[in-house]
Image (tube, rainbow, N blue to C red; front, side, top):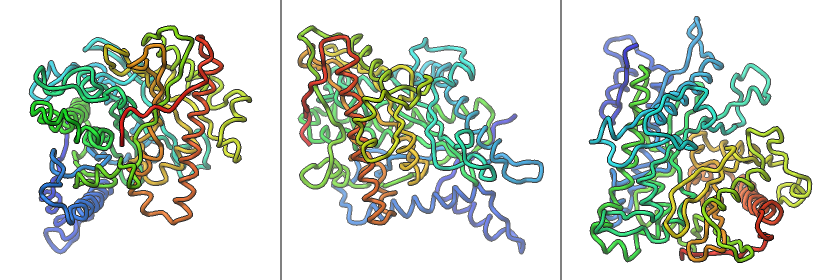
Length: 499
């Protein structure tokens, strides 16, 4: 089938609306449901951008991209699948979501993008999260299915059928990694080349990775969103903008170019995957969620002296004085997954009784059913001092469903990331870092929280406290009972970065 894509800018959209709403003659033309969804989302996005620019001075604008960014970006919209009568086929549309996720995952895993398009792709080859493979492969659907996450919602696949585990809609998540850009972000290699500099405290940003692309559907369309790299390299790296390294012009120039470059490459991979597969869809660039157009607003998210929050929480666990290696850190991360359980084990979401009794959620009568989204931890680059970091992707279906009532495009902020790595300053200690749920909900779900009542916000704050408490308890329990080194349950808070 010949590829059919459309790219909508503001002028093109305006033309579409004029044709769709008024027509060329006396008969009005009705927009298709996916085109109407694009029109509505574009209008909402443009209004949010306009509001975000009020009072912003030239000195305070976002210094990259188009001057505004949002945590998520809607990059492609597909039509739903219809039955022979032209009505929405819910089951077939949901199956199409899975097919599209597989198409994108296979493309990332199988294609060496820099080799085919060095003008667009400036670093090393992108890989599918969870794989360590050669640059060119021949993976099929079954090969990549293991590496695609499914985050559950409160919505049914088919609303005409009773809600059940088999009829629960899940948002598909495909994670992509680039060791070149990750190495720069995490302080392994210079930003700005040999005359540039390392990102300060780079390794302590490890839970901000990897990059995520999500696919889901509603009654109107199928949507492909991505976690905007412009968000990752700003909200999760706010301290870098005031670091002394920014006085290095090579570092500064490259650091400000990095977010948009990564974004352009992920977007290009998405389009290349679907164009190659001959899919019919509309290319978009719609900002989703809270829009940031002011660096003051960005920096305020982590200003702990003025109601901001730390993006990360770090803890140091001490052993018996024996030096740890990155391989040891991987083993410890795997042990935490075993304690937490994973989606591929028969005991998914059912921890041992002694641990369950300790979870804050259990204490208040909630069953969180924590599990790891992956059987094994993800590897992200590290420095010479500490080696690679190992990422655990923790998910509670109970809390994920609540979070996604704010909109399924927020899925890219999930699951909860936990990193295990050797302490860079003392290799006899293991460091465990958590993405701070308080920060995540405040910065990444702000648009959803703004539409809630006081009572609903209070309920979300309880969820945040439970997530914090549950995950820390699970890690402490695993470190105390399931690590082969000496008892490592004792730990201390570590704050390498002052926010």
